[in-house]
Image 1 (tube, rainbow, N blue to C red):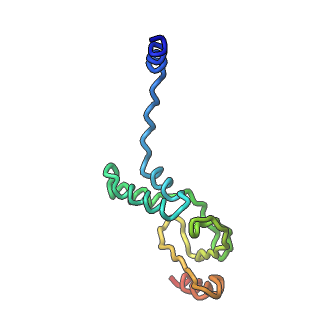
Image 2: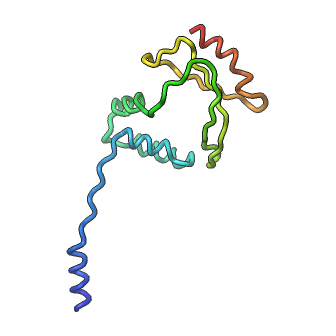
Amino acid sequence: MQFLAFFLIAVGTTPLPSPQAEQTPKQLLQGAVDLPSPEARSKAALRLAKNGKVTLDQWHECMQDFGDFEPQPKGRQSVRAKLWVDGRQITRTLELFVPSSYDAATPLPLLLLLHGSGGTGLQMLPGWERLAEQQ
């Protein structure tokens, strides 16, 4: 009986864990994006899509404001980035071009150019740079 009394006292005096603060849609999205595998990101995306507490307008607003990004200098630059490929993280060189007419206050589409096997993205960039400068 002494053991039972001690157990009840210990349980009765142990504070209950405080409920975690509910995450904002932006925090939920960031958590899903940062997962290491495509399968984990896919499962997280499905959970987010089924989240009935967040409206479509809230998700849209969240995605428009997603990420903290520094304005990039105009012109061409090469950047090294860590990417997840086939469940592992690799470092690749990415070529970035920002047109001279770019204004950070005006939303514009982002073009991602993915080259196939053979050649490099750098070889394909000049034609797209000319087009970006014309638009």
